[in-house]
Length: 219
Image 1: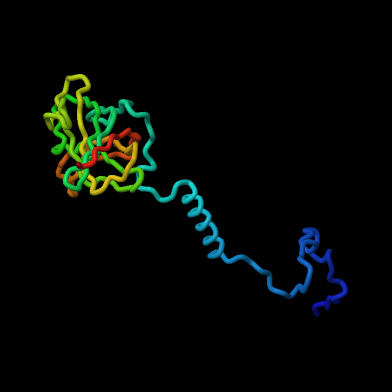
Image 2: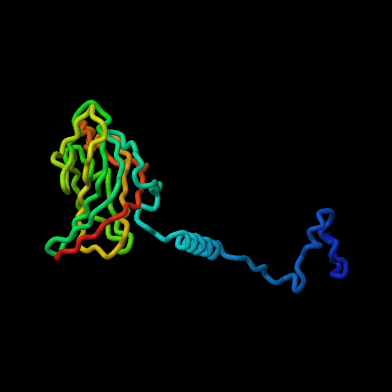
């Protein structure tokens, strides 16, 4: 027969050598213990992460991950090097064009064509710092010119030559600078079936320049 244990013998030391009984919370020993549900913990952690992200700058477009460099710094993008100097925002018939004046050099042995090699599409971007609008269209010209260069081809074996990036925006609120992004480019196969359709594509490494801009409204 199993011996009966009197309730009088159950006390703080009843936990044995482990001493666990000494840490029992006061109150009714039969009351269920309260625990924090896992979903509540997850929700609190998520809110904390969201708050931290917001305080750190919010959910900006990917330009936030670009390393900021001073204007005039020459950067190697792979097929070409570029140094951004200044910008001009010009309004014509209610629309705006932003001309970013820079210097470019071909790092390879073959000519580079801005549209064919996707240099602008994958390598450059512009964002207005006030409206946060990102320019949807861009062009790249090489050589001297009053506003744009006189060629779309950058030949190898030459020193840095003048070049111009042209971005189109619907509106252009007043500002003293524009944010210009430049991404390093990788030579990859863009075909989904591996047919060897090689193009220059943006990598995860990029740079950001706060470029001084002069504004010319339409008169």
